[in-house]
Each structure stands twice: as C-alpha cells, then as structure tokens.
Image 1 (cartoon, one colour):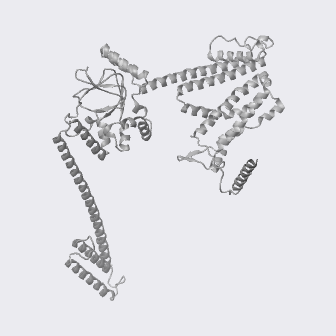
Image 2 (tube, rainbow, N blue to C red; image 1 turned 30 degrees about the vertical axis):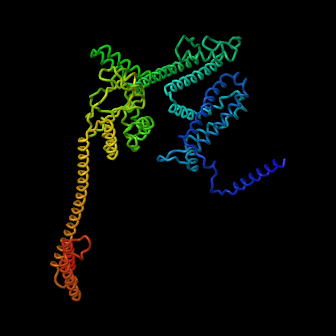
Image 3 (cartoon, rainbow, N blue to C red; image 1 turned 90 degrees about the vertical axis):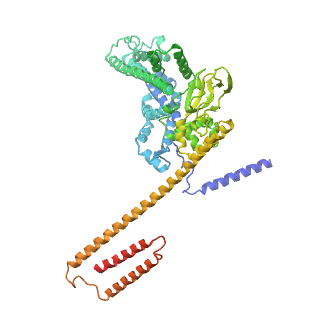
Length: 616
C-alpha cells in the first residue's frame, strides 16, 4: 500500500510539473496543433480523401431514396438520423483539414497557418463547403422528418468525391479496371435516381392507373418496400439499356419522363462504349510498348516467304516474352521520366548485376550509374548462339537469368556452364593493346534454355569512358592483368601500348601549354588595345587644346601665371632626368615585371600629360 501510495504521489507531482511547464509557455511558442499542416502529397491526406468517399456517396444515394420512398424514410428514421449527423461531423472535420492543407508556391510547400487560413476563407471552396453544412434539418420541424430533400445541400461536397477518385486512379496498379468500376458506380447511381423518380411520378399519377406506372400497392405482391424498389430499379435499367419493351405511357408527364430517360440512355450507352473502347485501346498500347509488335513481324515474314521453322522459332520467342512478361523496351517506357529518376530506377534494377563484373569492381559510383543506363535487355531462345569463336566482339554480356554453355566447335562438347550472375566478353570491348585475340571471341557460347542477358556495347562504354579518363586507364590496366593471367597478352604490344600512352600524355601536356600561351597572348592583345585607345584619347585632347589656343588672342582666356611656368619646366626637367636614369638602369626602378620599353612608354605618357597641361 505504501509503495502504491508513493507511486501515485510521484505521478501526481510529475503531472503538476508538466502542467506548470505548459502554463509557462509564452504566446510566441506555438503548440503542435497550431503548427499542424497537412501536405496534399502526403499519405495522410490521401487516406482522409478515402474516408470522405462514404459520406458523399451516402448522401447521393439515401437522400433521394428517403424522399421518394416514404416507407423507407419512416421505418428506419433513427438509423437515418444517426448516419446523417455522422456524415455532417465528417463534413465539419473535412473543413478543418481543408483549412490546414498546405499548397505549393514556387515549388515550396506553404505551412504558414495565417496564409493557409486566408487562402481557404477567400476561396469558392469555403463557401461551397459552408453551404453544404447549413442546418437545413431545421425544416424537419415544419415539413416532418420524412422530408429528406431538405438535406439536398449536402451534395455540394461532390468535388471532394471527384478529387478522391482521381487520386485513387493515379495510385492504383490497375487503372483500367478502376475506370470501368468507377463508370459502373456512376451508372448505378444514375439508375438509382431514375428509379426513385419513377416511383415518385407513379405516386403522383396514381399507382396502377395504367400499364406504365407502378402497379397498385394495395395488391400484396406489390406492397413490399423491397419489391417496390427492385421493380423501379429494373424498370429504369431496362430504359437505360434499351433492352426489352417498355409499356407505352398514358400521361403527358410520363411521356416527358420517357423522353428524358431515352436521351440520358443514349449518353449512357455512348459513354459505356467510349470508355470500354478506351480501355481496350490502352491495353493494346500497353502491350505494344512493353513488347515488340508481333503482327508487323508476322506480316513481314509471311510477305517474304520465310521458312516455317524460322517463323516457329520467332513465334515461340514472342510467346515466351508475353507469357513471362519479359520487358524488352525499358528505355522507351521510362523515356518520359526525368534523367535523375531514370538513373535511380536503373541503379536499383541493374547496379547489383553490373557490380559483379570483375573489371567494374572498385570503379567510382558515378561511372557505374552512367553505365547502367546503357544496359539493354536481350532474350535468347534454346540452342541459339550468343557468340561464336572468332567473331569480332562488339558488346559484353551479363547473365540475368538462365544457363549458357561454353561449347566446342562441334557444338556437342561442353566445357563449362554459365549461370545467373556470370559475365563474358568484357575484354573484347576495351581495345587493349597487345591482346593476342585481337578483340575477337575466344569461345562459343550457346543458350541452353531461354536466357535473359544484359548487353553493354563497345560504343556506349567508349562514350562513357571519354568523360572518365582515370577510370579508362584503370579498366585497361585490369584488363591487361586478366590477359596476362590467361597468357593472351603480347609483351611487345603491351610495350607499344605503354609508349602510345606516354605519347598521349605528352600531347596532352603540349595542349595544356598551348592553351596557356593562347591565354597570355589574348591578355597582351587586350592590353595593347587598351593602350591604343588611351593614346587616341590623348591625341584628341591635344588637338582640341591646340585648336582652342590658336582660335583666341594672346592674354585672353586666362594665361598661366609666370610663377607656374618655371615650376612646370622644372617638373619636366625632373621627369627627363628620371627617364634618363631609368634608361641607364634598364628599367630597374620601373617596378617588378616591367621592361625598359614599358618604362619608356610610361615616361612618354607622363611627358605627353605635361604638354597637355601646358597647352590647356
């Protein structure tokens, strides 16, 4: 007891301490609720949209049902009222979520609650949401609880349903099935509304007054509420599908109702045919994107009278691709994605396989990311040769799935079997100097069954390695080591390759020196041009000064004082002495990095400045 009391006391003390800390929070420190914002791209927002689907669909189905079938409205009144106000509560919470939903501005999610509130309250959506929650249920006090039509304003929340369905269509893995299901739901709701209106019109005209309206409900077989709804639903479905004969209307109201139904039926039929046609077309386009077009190939083979055996092999190859969902056009499928997303997808799919290749181990990751974009999937049929001995190697292969046999020239003897994860042909695409095989295949490789391979061409590897010279040298060195172990490397050729590499290094150094000289020449030319512009400006100034001096009489215009002339002449004499001393020292006092010619130019400029001053 004492232990329990002590534990309770410590819990109370802790709660009081937390309460004091909470009260000490200043107004400038917002709580977690005040800073709570929903990201429209987040999964939480998507889940909330799904939760908003049942309330909206409920109002679309139940409001018209209770309005046109009074027996249903009165018999389950307690259940309807409970569901009504539960949906209203969901509507109210949805307004809070909308008030806290962020939006993008210049690509950045806005999380400021003040801006979010201002944006939502000034939008049309707020007024529509507010109108959908008006307390129209108060009209129950006047019209009675069976008048469910007073809640018709709840249908204004339909845009929320459309948003949820659009989000679900973009996220589902089966968009075509979802589109067909959505279309069927729309048709069901349309037939449901038409059935309810048909029953209400029959009640207005009179049950059993003619063959078109609903039969007299006084008859026991037509008095059941379930029978009433099912009969009206069947009658509406028969009109919309134009299947079967419908009775001829006897009243003008019935004729107008049938005309409207027939027009709607035409639109429904057209929408069904159009949507189903779009689904079929999209399925066919999907097959054409994922798999090569078999019909075109068959027409070509038939037109050129290809032998039956070869056509059968091609048919089997296509059948294998289609049954096992082997995708051969990955680059075309992912072409619409940005480059960085294509790279991430290729890295996640192909990088583990590419990393198993011996020559690519320890290579930098950026190089491997460039190479995975160049891998092309290939499928070989049973008994088909991937390469033959003596063929020129244009690409290397990495086995993804299947078995390949290394066979002798007779095609019977098997030396080895390659399985998933193995690779071959990597040496032939590197152009290593001294390779005795001369970049030709050294073995016959034949597919045992259906084999899935990744191919990397020599051209693609060369293009990628042109941007990675260090990786290129590294790969060539590893290739030489492999050839040395196999005894396939010619020492003379290797030496020649090393000499060629040295020559390439010298050429690179010369190119760098040439670029440096070109840079210096450009700088000198810019300095010369600047000096010429300055000289032209000084000459123009001198000419204008002389012209002004000749144009005015002596003693006019403010001649220079006599006291200044000796000083000017003394300055000129000092400058000449400095010039002579500078020439005698070869420009040693002209400053670091200046030659005698540059010093002479500077003295000439100073002398010209003095003469200009004298002239002015």
